[in-house]
Each structure stands twice: as structure tokens, then as C-alpha cells.
Image (cartoon, rainbow, N blue to C red):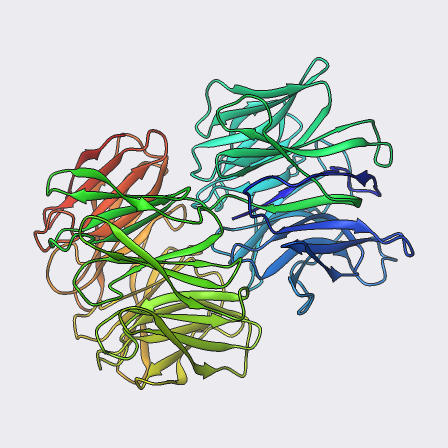
Length: 638
């Protein structure tokens, strides 16, 4: 996940000279604004591995930030020749190609923040022309498909930041720091008089800056609120904390004004508090800096020990623990460190050597390598399986058995040229080959794997939100044959698309949920196309967070579970074969704070269950299916 570090918070002109030094053992690609000495404009630059690239010469205003998959930068830039005084959110590749304008409207859109899945950008919207601190801006979100949602009123909302699971957005106002659902609704005050909110990698805490007398304080507070902890204080100015591994980077400087700032540094403060350990520096008239957040924890459902019961693989800060299911609870086991600790953009589960044990594969966007961890039933054996010449730009990476030989493979799509590449497992490494070349390279999402024609080879369904079409790439075993399978009359606004065999005919289908009216539409596969029809109409259309697929009643047809944090309830939409029958299956006394909710058969009884992870205390609660409801109990407490 990427977090912007704002060295200047004004929305007018600014500049200063920075001298910074490197933070040890932190791999941080950065993007920043630097004043061009000839034109006087601030321009977007990107730096990784000591190499600096001029990404865009367009006059930029605020907050460049790198997309979660590392291939694009979002920033606020001038519209046209600048004569109208309008600023919008622009997207551009890290190599400087593909500049597109995402937003439009009166006045300015500022401070972009990517959603963790890279499907949308949330930003500060000034559509009134007022620059009053209390009324200038509201929060808004625009998807890459062009759908815009207003989240708040004009309350001076600035600098949004997403939690790693995408369930919350933190932002600043003149009265303090608030959190709000990405769907909008009621905001919650977290800290008075704070600014520059930044979520921790696991989403349990927020770091922020607070002024107390002559001192600037770096503080943290639990996401649910409560007492704050001061980690670092100084008479120098502190700005823009961002989490990296177990440290928080914070900008520190002396002086005042933009050109008058001196001794500008980025310090790394331990999360536990204490003296700053290192400093990261570079030179140049820099306005704003965007840096990579620490890899958020990954929780993968997999039968790691091959006993028929689903386990949880936890990957965080280089450690890999497996919560091994004992049928009525989890036993925590350390299965080996992951080296290097950071730089991972995605972790996937699968059986990559076809031995019946669940394995994991991790991709490093910093160097374009796949590392596969094969389960030995009580530990992981990790090695590099592929090294791509193109490290960045991969927007979809999914597992499946695309050649029907047994081991799991990985399919990856590259947005720069619209190509699908399949990394076929031979049991000890990946052989990667081109399987499809799309004439339309961009605008796809989601892209999901399933066996849509029933030949036991995994295929890919590709959705294009510009025209609402589903294109299925059917595997021949050595390549994809792509054709149009569905054309939706409503192209945009879909919250979720999930794969399952909802009618039990052996062909995978797609379920699509629209929060505008709370409806589930099933695109049933005929083997050569989709037949789409309405299967459910919810009285509560919005606010649903987790929407997961499983056979919860054991009838051979996939169902959908959906969780609503407004009241902490699980509702199961059970498939009848031609529609959904939705009923309440669980009511949690703690409605919020659940950041990972994953499906598996954790007790081995043939019915899918749901594992719920609480970010508040690190516990895991299993909602075990009885066939008609969930029985929820504590399975693990740290």
C-alpha cells in the first residue's frame, strides 16, 4: 500500500530545498514534486533504486501517490493551460506514459489516496471555490471506471488515507481526525486537533501529528479511539507520518514558510517509541513526497498441513505463522521467516506442486520476482520460481489450473499492452508464456478465474466497466480464446463480482452486487455465454463489507455470505438453483473491527465456515456452519 508524505500542506505555490539521507533496510520507491528551475512549475518525479525519472511535466499541485500494484501515480494537476485555475486528479504510469484525467469539475480536486485494491481514488474535493479551513472541501471517491461518490459535506476534509483492508478512510478536518466508511455514512471522531492521519499496516492504529504548546508530537491511537500514545516530540515542525515495517517515517524541519525551511529530514521512529533510528534524504526543491507503506498483513485460507481442515497462513513483516486447525480451535505454529521482509505486492495460495498441501506464492513488484513457499506439512520451503523482465504494471494476478495438469498456475495481466501471461507450474518453478493479447489494453476490472465451460481448465472472465461487457478468455491448455459473453445495460456502480457454481451444474457463474439498489444478479454460464438474471433484492442496499462465496449448506450449490458492520450481522443468501433465499445466520455483539473474513471448511465437516479476524485484539473467531446458521466461537487469542 502506498502512503503520501506531504512536505507542504498549502494548496498554493511552495518550494524549499531538502537535504535528506537514506533510511537503512527500507525499500521505498518514492514519488515527489520538484520545482523545474526554468518554468517554475512543480513536476512529478519517481525514484527507485537510486534512479530518478521525470514522470510528468504537467504543473502539479498536491500529493503524488503510487498505486498499490506500483504501476501508476495519482496526483493533482492543472487542467488545460491553467488559465481557468482548475485542478483535477490525473493518473500516469511510473514510466511517464498513459497520462489520463480521472476527475473533472469546478475548482480543484486534491490529495488523492488509492483504495487498497487499486480500483478507485479518494480525494479532497473543492467544488465551492471557498478556501476557508472549515468549509473548503469534502471527501469524494472516483472509481477507475468513472463513477463518483460524495462521502462528506464541505467540512474542510483533507488528506484521506485508507486502512489496508479498505474498510475505513481516515481524514483531517479543522476539528481533528475522523474515520468514515468508503461507502459514506456517519463519521467517527478519533483524535482532537490532530492532522496527517496514517493507518498502521494492520489497520489497528492511526499515526498523526499534534501541536502542544511549542512542541510537535508524533502520536498513535487505536483505530477505535481511546487514549493516544506519544512516540516522539520536538520543537521542530513534524509533518506527514507514514508506516514502514515497524517504524513510522515522519518529516521534520526547522524554519518557516516554503523556501525558508531548513534542516528538512525524514526520520524513522520506532513504532514502540523512542529516538529516531535513521534518516532518509535526497536533495532538490521538493514539495511533496509519496512513499511505499509497509506490506500489510496477508491472511490466506489454505489446508497447509493437508489434513482436510482449512488453516490460516499469516504473513506479516517477514514472519509466517500458520494457525493450524485442530477442529475446534487454532494452534499457532511458526513455519519460517520470509526473506526479504518487505517489497511484496501480492500473496496467493494454491497447491503449486500438486501434493495436496496448501502452498503460497508472493510477488515482489520491486524486482519482478515470484517466490513460492511449498508446504512441508510443518514448515515452508521457499525459493524463487520466476524473474520477470517487467517488474511493474501487473494489475491482475490470479491462481488456477490453466493447463489442467494438476499443480496451480498463476495468470497475470499487464495493462501497458493488454496481455495475459501464464506462469505454468512444473512443480519446482514457473514457465511463463504469453496466452492472450487484447486490442483494448486498459479499463479492465475485475478479472477473475473460474472454469466457465466445464472442461476442468481454469479460464478468466474480464469485465470492462466502460461498456459493461464480460469477455471470457477460455483456456485451450496452451492459450486463451477470448469472446464476448455478456453485455450489461448498467455498466458502472457494481460493488462486487464473485465466482461460484451457483446453480450446481458444474460450470462456474458470476454473481454481481449493485449497492445502488441492493440487488444480486447471477450471470449463469451456458458454456459459451452468460445468461444474467436477478436473484436477490435487499431492503438494505449499501453498507455491506465482506461478500464471500461458499457452500454453507452443503447442497452442492455455492451461496453468498455478506457481513454488515452497521449491526454486526452475517446474512447468507442460499442458492435454490434459480434464486437466493437470504436469512440471518449470525449476530455479533461486536459489530465492527473485523478486517479479514475468509471462507474455509475449518472443522472438516463438508460445510463451509467463515473465519473472522479482529484487528482490535488479534483474535480469530470461527463462524461454523450448522447448515442453517452459524455457531461462532473463539478459536485463537494471541
